[in-house]
Length: 141
Image (spheres, rainbow, N blue to C red):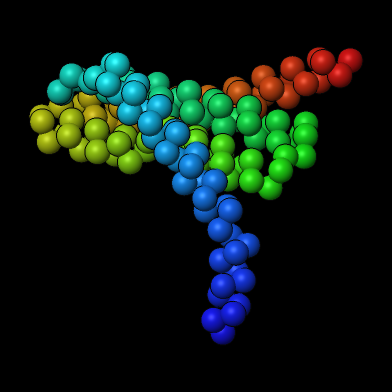
């Protein structure tokens, strides 16, 4: 079935390309933030925290826009949602930061960071979705 695999790849190729392009943009933005505001060893990693919270808020607004407002092109969600925002938010670095804090003898800071990021990220998505939907309802009056 080599013909079927080639056909499947042609259909998914543009999606993969958009995720890769968006991911490169998002990861570059995250890297830039980390360079501008580097975390001090053993302290709360504020840059990663705020990058993740901001990214989650943007994901909330983005999802409202592409599901409630306009029918986006099929490559918008893979490019921006999965690619840019997936590359920008960094839950892998979040996990590494927790491990580093615990290993450096700061378990309280590590577990505080674990809980604060989880709560803030979920709150950011919820608040962004709620605010975006209210703004749309107000605009439609």
